[in-house]
Image 1 (cartoon, helix red, strand yellow):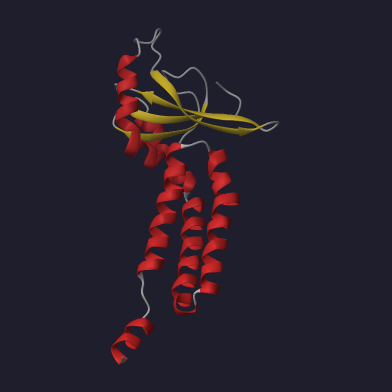
Image 2: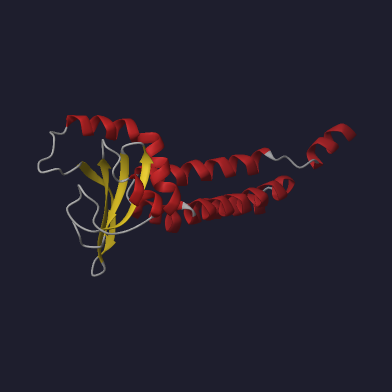
Length: 184
């Protein structure tokens, strides 16, 4: 009898750990794969519904109340943390998981004319009235964009058609190039 009571009174970290892993996987997959509108739908619709059900379960299940409230806090903190870090994490995670797809698409492209570099749209965002920002993935076989990427300089590097706001090196010969808003 005392052994069962001891077991029941002991705090179990599995539920909060599952909440943390589940929230991280859900938000990270949304950030990597889908349109930012789905991230906002998760943030304003799915996450509050999940949090509401965890809270209801904590109210109903008296024996596991502390575990469920801990899971709720962990779920909210992990969701907030991953969403807060989405801007620097998105290109790194997308490149890690999808670089093979993008590399094969580059090799399917014909060689560009007039010294231009191979490129494709990598990411875009914007809002009506504010303009759209586009980021292109650029294949630079000579790594001529490595210096502007290291120095975080803006301007018009050779091989690009116009001025750029930012160049980020993804790996050798591959760069994410962000153009100024409403520049294609």
